[in-house]
Length: 139
Image 1 (spheres, rainbow, N blue to C red):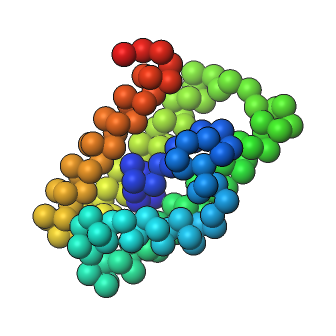
Image 2 (cartoon, rainbow, N blue to C red):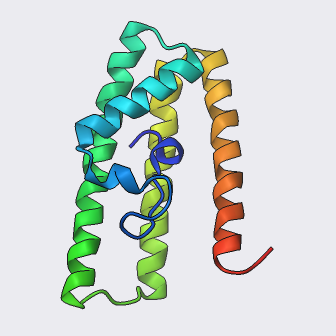
């Protein structure tokens, strides 16, 4: 639930991009790396690290399961373009998870750490939007 922005790994094809090597990692490995990155950026205490490790592990397990589901659909040829209602539902669920994650982080982090995390999220969102525009030939 937490770190939707920080944990949103590039969803590129297999082996593409600088995140390609991460597709073979276990959820535990991904959660550990993400927690260490946050520890360096936000100077987390040992207690905060434990709490965030648990959250990152839950998120990594959910992402892996979703990626496997999508991969299975793609390989079976049953992956169809979602309807407008399905897209709305998916986006709504994703935003609900981001809101829950932000609330949980706000509970764990102190005010200064939380503000720093928010700034990091905004920068990552801008970077993602820029890359998406480049991918689709827009500027």
